[in-house]
Amino acid sequence: MALVEEFERTGSWLFRWRSYLPFVFLPLIVTAVLRYPVIESHPNLHFVWSIVSLGVSLIGLAVRSHAVGHAADGTSGRNTKTQVAETLNTSGFYSVARHPMYLGNFLIALGIVLHSASPWLVVAFLMAFALYYERIMFTEEAFLRKKFGSVFTDWSNRTPAFLPRLRQWKSAERPLDIPKVIRAESAAVAVIALTFPALEFAMHEAQQGNVAIENSWYILFGCGLVLYIIARVMKRQLRRWLKYERILYEAAK
Image (tube, rainbow, N blue to C red; front, side):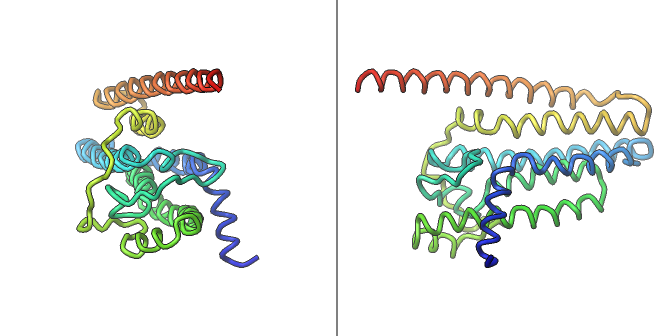
C-alpha cells in the first residue's frame, strides 16, 4: 500500500475515534500528578501554576468556541464515521489556521498536561499529539482537496495548517451562533470542569493526605456542570424540534 493511501486509511481510523483515544493518556497524567512535589513545599507557586494551566485550557476552549460558532452548518462538527463539509470555512479562525478545532484540542489537553508540572509528560504529549493529529489532518485535507479543488488549494497555500498566522486575520463572515456553541462544546466544558478539580483532589490526597482544595475549583466544577446540563437540555429540545419538523414534512408530501 502506498504511503498516501496508508496515511489516509490510518487517518480515517484515528478520525473516527479521535474523541476517545486521548483518554489513553489519562493513566500517565494520574501517575504524574500523584508525584507532584510542589503542594507541600511551594503552595503559592502551585496555585499560580494551576491558574496558568487552566488558562491554557480555557484559551483552547475559546478557540474551539469561536471556530464552531462562526462555522457554516455542516462543517466543524463532531461527526465520526465520515468526513463532512458542505462548504469551506476560510474566515475567522479559519483565516489564520486550517485546523483551529485541533489547535483548540491541543491547548485544552496541553493545559491539563501542564497542570502536572511534569516535563517528561509534556514531551510525551507533544510527540504523541504530532503523530496523532498529523494523520487526521492529512486525511481531512485529502477529502477537502477532492471536494473543493482549487478553492482549497488557494486557501491552503496562504493559511498555515496549525500554528496561527494572526496578521492575516479575516473577520468571520457569519455571526456567532451561541446556542450552537453551547451544544457543540458541552463535552469540552465538562472535561475541563471535571478534570482540573479531580487532579487537584488527587494531588492533595497524595501529598497531604486530605482532599481539601481551594474553593475556586468547586466553583469551576459547579459552573461546568450547570453549562453541561443546559447544553444537554438544548440538544434534547433540538432533536425533538427536528423530529417534529420531519413529521410535518412527511405529512405535507
